[in-house]
Amino acid sequence: MEEKLKRLFDSIKNDPQNSSYTKEGIDPLYYANPAAKILIVGQAPGKKAQNTKKVWNDQSGIRLRKWLDVTDRQFYESGKIAVLPMDFYYPGKGKHGDLPPRSEFAAKWHPQLLKEMPNIKLTILVGNYAQRKYLGLKGSVRLTEVVHAYEAYLPKYFPIVHPSALNGIWLKRNSWFEQLVVPELQKRVQRIMDEN
Picture 1 (cartoon, rainbow, N blue to C red):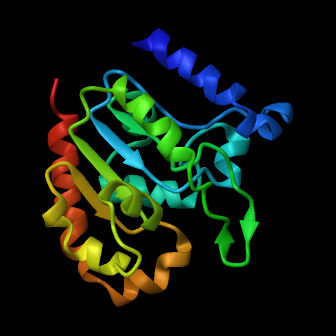
Picture 2 (cartoon, rainbow, N blue to C red):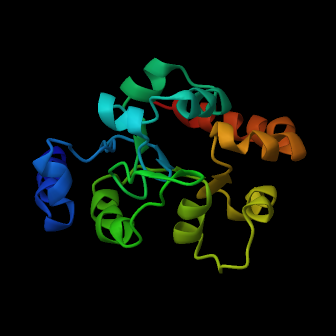
Picture 3 (tube, rainbow, N blue to C red):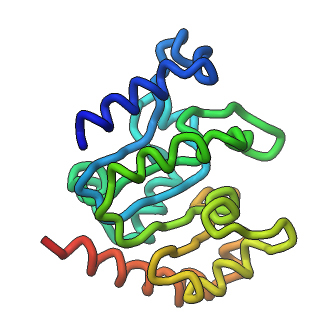
């Protein structure tokens, strides 16, 4: 499986779709491990993450690890957590935060990578893009509704809001998320992390 994952990495890197990044020496940024039990699907790497070649290596990542109740070491080194953004490259800056991930990127690469990670027990869907793709949601469904109804998607999926500082107002308006949803997320993550 590890050899197949290496070949997939090379295929992503050499895909003409990603040639502008490869020419600049930028590698695709994601974590895939055959032993992974928890998958985190987010938007796309931020600028800092791409520059340091480390997923969720920013303030959003600090908040995410707090919500998961995992240490940096558990997150990056345990091999139990995989990270597949909706795009493996930083998309650039927009008017209100980062630009969206390329629309067909995940459809092309996620299924191939997921085949090599057969032990995933929980997929945490961070934000709108991941939730719409994995849950097959219609355009009219709002993120707040999805996250509030998280139990409807268990045990396979756990939708959460993006931990970005841009969502500070959302978190204040929806205090139920950190009071009720985050503890349930922590409980499920801890149960899986404690397994051998």
